[in-house]
Length: 391
Image 1 (cartoon, helix red, strand yellow):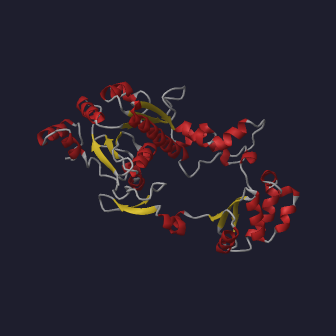
Image 2 (tube, helix red, strand yellow):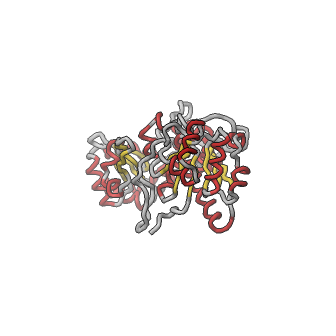
Image 3 (cartoon, one colour):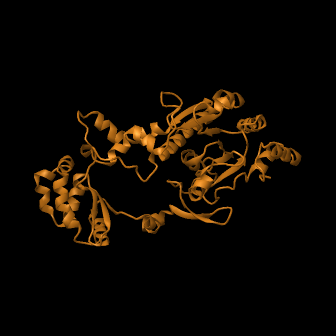
């Protein structure tokens, strides 16, 4: 059987994490992603974090091409004519100045799905502002939820806006492709990391906007939806919201009488009295080791999970069974851990065995497909249109 996006060609001009994550998702389900890199520096992430680069660029091809030069733009436009998706993450206005904005690209290929992924989007007072994940989370309000009022906000350990933006952009690209494949023609996508962060904030932001005085403690649960230390100084998370799970938890703890406590009758009440509930649960949870609790909670159907350290994630039996963490060797023989595509398609082939490409690895084959001969390629290399050593 064919891979899901086997017939789709994506030209990827992005750098760093958000764009790489977007096109990684597309590559993992079969799209041919051609990574266009500037001769010389290439994608900055190659040097900043080789392991992360390897994890986000598997199953892609790489071509060096200087799109600042007329000859480079000419070659890119020829590639655009044969592609389905054009993806870039430069600041607003950069592609227009290079003669590669949507109008120019659409003129070369009216069917193209053109996606621009930026921090603040193509329009608005903040469009030209520089930024990174922490800034987008700040604007969205996410950073303010990390601490109590008056305390210094702390950046989360995950680049949530970057990942949310990459995910949202991949979804938008697929929507554009669906329209394209059904005869709807091409389209332009203005995707912004701040907008994606705001979308992820919806479960917290919307209730807050409907409350006269929005307090963090009113938006963050606690009590039976919290993390507790066990006797062996490990941690276990409880995700008890529904009343049936509350009853299951009480049965597992041997404290069924708490089901009659007026403070804890409903989830809303349990949240209101989270401090009282925590005062009761903390000493109880410290009476047994983590594994004892997990065996008991699994038996009684309590939403609970061990808080894995990073070095334990791969060893988690469920993670191992799902095959979500695996290893690939790069072009230099270095082994890098990878996290797989977050869904499976039983019976349909998937790509995950091609490591991230060496910079410019596929330049020769791409140029050859466009009809360039050896002399032409060496001339392009000499002119700086393609990278030195790409041939």
